[in-house]
Length: 141
Ligand SMILES: [Zn+2]
Ligand SMILES: [Zn+2]
Image (cartoon, rainbow, N blue to C red; front, side):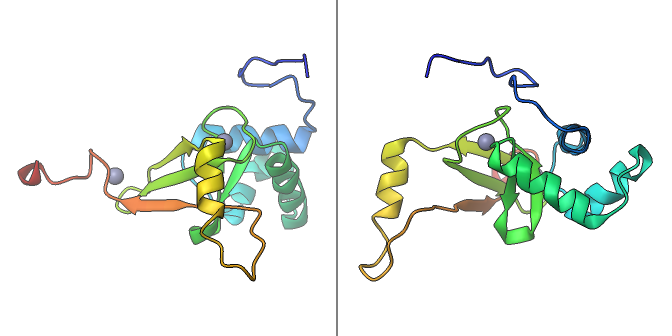
């Protein structure tokens, strides 16, 4: 593969009008949003049906530009423009700040190796929860 795209905001990928509305909504938010919050925010631009939002979210997830936070049924724009799906999330449980952590192939392989014999694991979903620097009480430092 010679076509290396810069990690700028359009990735050279063609997005439909709905996809780019929803992606820019998530990028502006900078925090995880539920599908219904997204629907609320894109309503002004003429998207008014939940299935339309879900379809565009699925397409954006396939492109690696949007990720799903499994533990809170929310969606977030990829922290790096787009990625290949090897990542973990660290989440502050007080302010909901989310940081995307890229995983190396070795990390991914090591995690998949935890799978028991009867399950052939292919995918890792990893979310770390805690308190971010800003939310940490001063006295505890
Ligand atoms: Zn990503
Ligand atoms: Zn925080």
